[in-house]
Length: 199
Ligand code: IMP
Image (cartoon, rainbow, N blue to C red; front, side):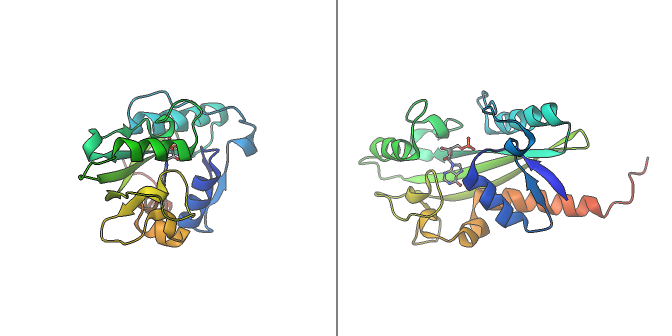
């Protein structure tokens, strides 16, 4: 099945390709001539995922999905949350975001956090949302070179290593995005078995 993943983030694309498996051919906005940045201007993860999917659907008329992710830190009242990408300011790097987060938690004992991903799917003009979460804590220092974003400072519950110390398969097995993608895949598979809607 061919479907558009409305992202120009190569790390996400690789993770989702890996999680969905070879039955799905993922097309990117860039491959369809959408080279501009896809807007995400809302203040919830759900609304941003929907905005990105609607934008690409509006431009192509093809089935597509988009994801949006936030890191929610308990001691920071859920921040950076929906603002995770630009936590350290517009145009900042992942390293800037991580440095700001570690500074904000300097001396803070409660380091509980969760990653939350919402995937918005538009299929035959209908919209669906899927969610995945992983609980964990923010480490005192960075560890690992795999993954991206905040992975070097996020240690999932019950694990000794950060997400950046895991292979892509290990990360996908437990991660927020891995869970949301499995929900999406199960839905697509179940839907492929439907002969036709009744009534
Ligand atoms: P967005 O979903 O592209 O808006 O991502 C929001 C922010 O969270 C960006 O700074 C990403 O780098 C970061 N982020 C998204 N997914 C992950 C992940 O799986 N691990 C670590 N950071 C992530």
